[in-house]
Amino acid sequence: MKRRRGKFPWFAYLVVILGAVAMVMPFLDMVMSSFKGAGEYGVIPYKLLPESFNLDNYKEAFSQLELPRLFKNSVIVTVSVTISVLVTSSMAGYALAKLRFRGRAVIFRFILATMMLPPFLLLIPTFLIMLNWPLAGGNDILGRGGDGGLTTSLISLILPFTVSGFGIFLMRQFMVSLPDEMLEAAKIDGANQWQTWRLIVLPQTKPVAITLGLITFIGTWNEYIWTLLISSSDPDLQTLPVGIQLLQSFLDPDRTMPIVMAGLVISTLPVLVVFLIFQKYYVRGVVLSGLK
Amino acid sequence: MTTAVSKAGAGHTVAAPVSRPGKLHREGRAAYLFLSPALLFFCIFLILPFMFAIVLAFSNWGGFDLGTMKWSGIANFKEVLSFDGTFVKPILVNTLLFAFGAVFMATFGSVLVAYCIDRLSFQGFWRVLYFLPVVATVVAIGNVWKMMYQPAGLINAVLNKLGVNSVGFLSDASYALPSVTVVHAWASIGGAVLILTAGLKAIPDMYYEAAEMDGANSWHMFWSITLPLLRPALLFVLITQFIGGLQSFALIIVMTGDGGPVNATNVAAFEMYQRAFKYGAWGTASAMAMVLFVIILAITLLQLWVARRRGEETS
Image (cartoon, rainbow over all chains, first blue to last red; front, side, top):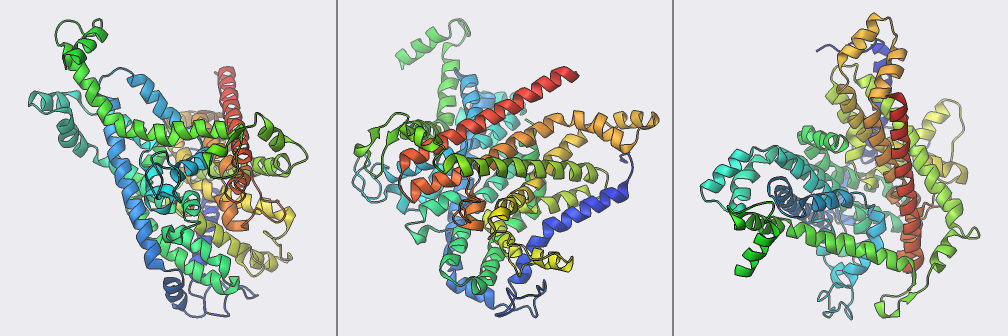
């Protein structure tokens, strides 16, 4: 289809290409710096390309940053949160889309409203709640007496993200359009609600589940503030972004920056690959959220 | 069981008469079972902390023992909003400059880019390129730009080539805030481009064809067709970007560490974070959070109100 919305494609090409260079250049600089050898970084005049593709920074990143440990934490947290968000969103979405019950409109509106509360507002109280979690980390039933409560375990990085209001909304919007006849047929065959959800509805939601899973995966992998806070007293809980950022505080910057860049390349790659493979679904999720 | 059924029968006498009194009730019970994880979560991680945040803002508490918490009325707000402190000026002013600056740059840039992309082939390819910063972690974005802003970095190298002296982007107090704002805008253009291109796609071609027949040029078409019809998408972009800009501080931590030089890049959410987790002043920090929350709410409502009034005038 040819779109004829006024002319000037040369100008459009100029704008879009210049902008694209500005978008890609920092990432190119990141990759190139990660290969720069000792004495090549922080020198004037600046050179984009390294003299040779030196892998020392990557080796250093693995030993100094303890990349395997950070990677493991990142994977555990991201996978747990993603699975949990998918399950809870599709359950709640099913109830809101296909079941009739008292208070449905109120609960749906409440879930929409939850998306409006900015995260920074809940940061302090949520931290205090994790700290005083009953029967965790030595706490008594009233949440007192222990040292750290839930904040000493990876659970504290997972639990506050297990349900997503946006996820429920996305699932509900998708499930509304599933034909009622299909669900009726399952019920006539004697399926209960759980079986209907599990065997009939769930397989149908694959496209929206990929979208939601991807958005959750990328968001969780990149999460920074909460993890920084929780791991401030326990480095064992650091994930990739936090571990890489904190390395800099106790090393010489000219020496560290190339190592940090190597770590960042490694931590960005999984997200980038996943995004490029599934970008169609990710893009759809962002667009859907903008056009509600 | 019998009591449950009769209760349901009583509740639904109007909606579901004689036929099957238990059916709706069973469906209702199933619905609440399906919703229970989500509702339980929202109680513990949303309602409870929200209430707690309000209580904290009005209390005086420094330690970890809830028993030592004292009600202090509006003392925290008085302290936070006093003009002798640093919160109103420079911190709140920084927050607004950061958010308004970033939203202005990102919106202007994304409208321009989306409008241009809409004319090219390989649109998906271009959108993905602009979307890369959205997918990257703030630690990557912050550090790469920190590196590029250094005296020996890429941007100063380009400036020097053009005959301009090196600029201490992050070390000079008068450049630090704009420098960080640019990065925030850069990182948020991709999401906006995406929503705006979707909005552009929804505008039917026939409007442009009609305008072309009337001899309108590109500029006319943009002002009288594209911009008015793009308004819903634009409004969404503006509101979400404002909300994001006013509360973001991860980039500040990564790029300037402590909001320096001398508070030049300190923003409200970061000051709240510092007060709470560096000094343990839960009350003051929560009062700051509340002030910022009210500002976000006010700006959002104002935008919605302006958009609605504008809509009434033109239609």
